[in-house]
Every structure is written in C-alpha cells, then in structure tokens.
Image (tube, rainbow, N blue to C red; front, side, top):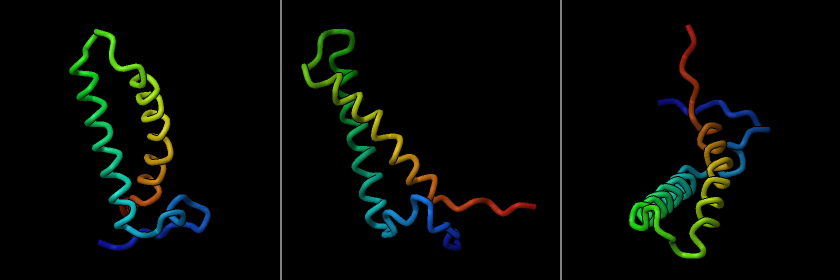
Length: 79
C-alpha cells in the first residue's frame, strides 16, 4: 500500500499522525454507538435532557471527521 499524495492545502496536513487519526475515528465510532444505544433504549419516550444536543453535536462533528477521513484515503489508480 502506498502513501497517498496529499496536497499541502488539504485536511491531511492537519493531523498527519496515522495513530492520532485512528484514535479520533475510534472515539467517534464509540460515541456514535453510545448515542445510538441510548436512543434505542429510550425509543420514543422522553430521554435525558442533554440527549438532543448530544445528537446534534455528533452530527455536526461528522463533517470535519468525515472530511479528515476523505482527505487521507488514497485515490484508486486510474486507467
């Protein structure tokens, strides 16, 4: 596997350490699992007061974390 050629203006230069990115992605996934579990537990019933704000924040943080993942994903070879 080769290292992707990342332009200096991309998100890939923000967090260059692969281990740090792995930790960020892992924490994001665990937070999503926890929030999803809480949502499944409460269902349509009223959940904790902080829950709607936590879901909104999680959705908002998906934008930069997804951008970071895209910036560090190598492009497939073109024909």
